[in-house]
Amino acid sequence: MQSKLINFIQVLRTHDVRVSPAETLDAMAVAGTLGFDERIYLRSGLSMALAKTPEEKAIFARCFDRFFQHELADFSDQEQLGEQPEDGDAEYTENSDRDSELEHDDSSLLEVAARDNDALQAVLDMPLMQSLQQNDRNELSLAMTRAGEAVGLQQIQMFTQKGQYTRKILDQLGEAHIRQAVIDLEREQSPALAQLQRYRDLLREQVRDYVEREYLLHAEGKNKQFMDEILGKTKLNNIEHLYMHKVHELVRKMAKKLAARHARKRKVTKRGQLNMSKTIRAGIPHDGIMFKTYWKQVHKDKPQILAVCDVSGSVAAYAKFLLLFLYSLQDILPKVRSFAFSSHLGEVSEFFANYPVEKAIELVNWKYGGATDYGNSLLDFANLALDDINNNTTIIILGDARNNNGDPKLEIMQSIYQRARQVIWLNPESRRAWGTGDSEMLRYQSTCHFTAECNNLKQLERIVDQLLRSTR
Image (cartoon, rainbow, N blue to C red; front, side, top):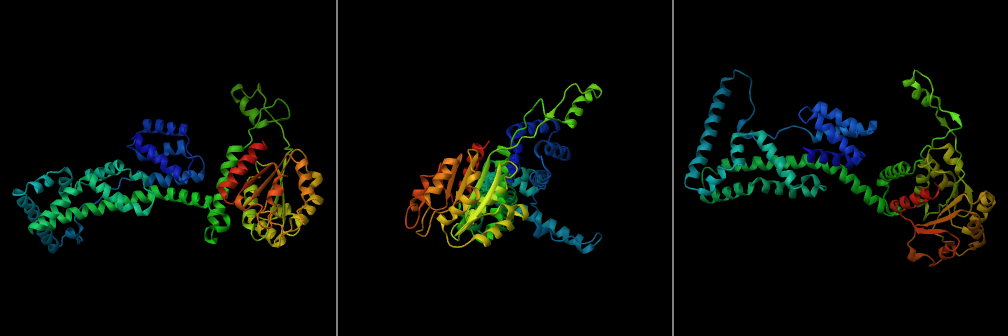
């Protein structure tokens, strides 16, 4: 049962429920105390140990009900049983008696055929075949579950694997012996062939249904993770509009992960403003006497980040997601000021203060999009922000450095480099293209502390992670 619980926790993780090793041990202790017989108690106990937010509790409830369902497979011969009419129907009673006689005759045919066929007799003596003949649903469902665990069914990821795992489970159950017996009876044209074929087909149908249910449970989260992995490594300008909402969701997920990793820890201080709520709670065991006081102190962040984004046609998609990334991290980032440019540059921080981030990015692209002129844009930037740059300032520039053969104004970049704590240049083009044609990247590179190729979300996440480490 411990392995089953670990498999369940793995399902939760594929559905974006964060479960730590310590929480896994807590869940095992809960399961050991409550047992697996009472599902209601187990469900409540595991929910308290594993789910931490309302969203995670909803996902937990859905996954628990699907993972621990006790629905048994139905191996009865539906075609033979047919629909049951109302009670007291004499015709139904007569038909039922006839069906019972037919079933008895079919079983007798198998027994008769097995008298002179040692291979068929061995098949009829198999526990699987006996369970099929007796319609022992409980034993057959357990056998399928054990076979699924033996072949690693919980690792299923793609819908194309369903047939592969169905065949593996059937082989694990011993269906190959039944299949060979069917071939032998068909060759002999035995009257017992039809009944053995029905047992074989019932087994195959129920195994296929079992694999389908497990696929929906295990593969849903894995497919989402696989899609996120693909989108994270795909160049942003190659992502079709159909997937843009998924990319926005992925950006927020990455930002949430970075926020959890770099969130500032509150420091205990002995001066500042009295934290009344915490102090009063600490005094409750002492009849309200505040033996121990707690203080809170407002800490002002001195560092600032200036994000300078090229929003010309070839780079606009990358700038959009950099700005989305930065503004998804406002709670943990130092002060962020944003600038956008093509032929001229302007500060766009007020757009993000007055509009939702997606609308703000659209307005930025509309106002500042056009042909690129890095020299003129650097002059605008120097007029707007050069005096505000100091050794606590980080400059992030996102652009391809293609200046249409204009003056690059390297002296302004050198002045920024001398004043700033660090200058980071992110270029969506491949490094092999730097310096080719009208690219000034190799010249700008000498005025930066760090340059990197950045054209997908994984690269952007890694660079923003490094940025957060350096500004702590």
